[in-house]
Amino acid sequence: MKIICVGRNYAEHAKELQNEVPVIPVIFMKPKSALLLPGKPIYYPEFTDDLQYECEVVVRICKNGKFIQEKFANKYYDQVTLGIDFTARDLQREQQKKGLPWEIAKAFDGSAAVGTFVPITIETEVSNLAFQLKLNNETVQDGHTRNMIFSVDHIIAYISQFFTLHIGDMIFTGTPAGVGRVNAEDKLEGYLQGNKVLDVLVK
Image (cartoon, rainbow, N blue to C red):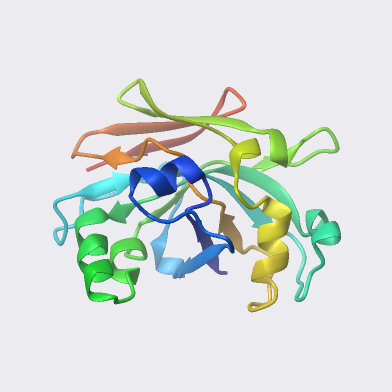
């Protein structure tokens, strides 16, 4: 099982972190040990003083594939939920300044929280999904998949040029603007199309 993530897939988020808006998908990966299952808390890592949330739409791969054409990509995922790409922002900035990879800031244990997956039906328009993240009952991120720079189908076609996709792989499709810091005892709740699918407590 792979956790594949897309960076800077919403223009406003790229701008808020003072990054360039990409012209091709920015891809990074997290190991299986990064997966934080529904109902499990995240423990604030000792190696960071700036743990931040990034709420994202996540799709689950249901069919093995490589070199997938974009027009057929919708046949390769069958469930959707929300996830949080937890980021040690201070470590990420340090690594970026040195021109070094930033897996230590993005791929640590528990850094990929996922909610309860919802089946994708014939009525589901993945390109037309609204989602929100609440921090201690206050909405901090309010996103919509129509604002993605690269669609889910485009992302799958692009990724599959480099990595074979396998059943059970998860793709984090990028976060909108509004990312921010969390503290111990904070509660994060994710809503997809108005339905709560994600609940994470910071310990």
